[in-house]
Every structure is written in structure tokens, then in C-alpha cells.
Amino acid sequence: MKTSLWITLSTLLIAGCQSVPRAPISTVEHVDLARFMGDWYVIANIPTFIEKGAHNAIESYRLEDDGTIATTFKFRAGAFDGPIKKYNPRGYVRDRQSNAVWGMQFVWPFKADYRIVYLNADYTQTVIGREQRDYVWIMARRSSIPEADYATIVMLLKREGYDVTQLQKVPQQWN
Image (cartoon, rainbow, N blue to C red; front, side):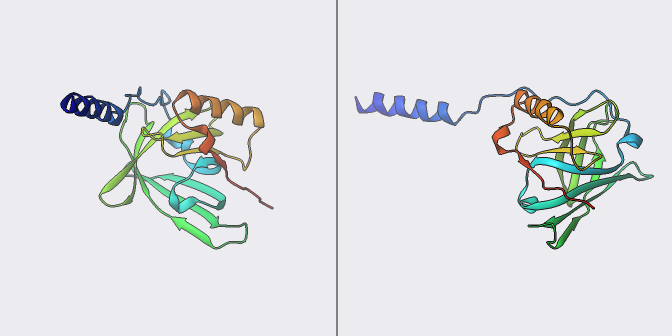
């Protein structure tokens, strides 16, 4: 009796530890890197620990001659008049056919997963996601987007397997 109970409990424990496989996160078909470069306001995100409480967050990209992407992520910490925080990771295009899958290197030799999962036709709104679906960034060329566009993007993220209840709007206030 004890042996069969132990086997049953062990089997249930092992089964409970297995994760349900997810389909790979979708990416856009193609990104024109030259058009993608420039400033992007962070409209909302599931933030990393460094960007919690960020205000006026902007991510800027510049395509370098060697094909890498010089990146500047800048924001005010905690308030609109908070201290300026600035990070300069480097992007590496991993999928040259689509240009939609990058590695983003904050610290050598590690490259974080970075995937362009949405990009509208006029390159004014984008979503950067990760295969793990742990972080996401909704960004735009302006400091706000229409609520209908935001709702559409949230639904896209939900379909991709994100927990959209974790999304936080990033306060943007510019003169």
C-alpha cells in the first residue's frame, strides 16, 4: 500500500513540474532596419527590475556600420523629475531574413532575447517581446497612442500567451 501511494504521489509531482509546451511567439515577417531606427516612446510594458517606476522612458536605436544596433534606453526613475537613468545595450540581429529577432546585450557575453512581434505599416507603433513571455514593451514614435490601438495590441499579446494583467502603462509627460 505504501509503495503504490508513494508511486502515485511521485508521478503526480513529476507531472505537475512539467511545463506545457507553447507555440513559438510570432514575429513580424520583415523589418526594414533603417526605418526602425530612431526614438521610440515606451507606452506600456511588463517591466524588468531596472525599469520599474520609469517615467518618460524612450528607447533609441542607431544602425552601426558593422550591422549592430547602438541602443540608448533612458528614463526618469520614480517620477517626472526623478534622476535620469541611462543604459546602452547593443543589439545584434540574429535572423537576417526577417530582421525581427535580435539579441540585446547589456552585459558581455549574454544576449537577451528580443523579438519584434508587432510593427504597424507606417513604423509608428511596435511591440517587442520575448520567447519566455516574461517581459514586453509597447512602443510608439509619439508619447501616446489611441486607446483603440492599445486595446488591439493587448489582445495580440494575450493571444501570444502573455499575462496581460501584468502590463503597466509608462507615464509620459512632455512639454
